[in-house]
Length: 72
Image (cartoon, rainbow, N blue to C red; front, side, top):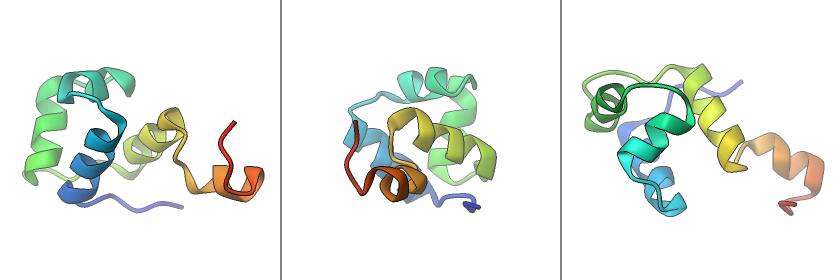
């Protein structure tokens, strides 16, 4: 089970994927404001939203276990 991410983790992953804050928020069906608060560290991102973000981006740790580290 994943834990809630730090604001730096949220921002780093979003930028690595080339998403704007708005695009990242839409990806997991939350408001832009919620995403902004998470990145600013004003609120903690729920672990389930973080996990959904990683799943949709193809970065979830289980993908490495299942695919031997190779995304398909």
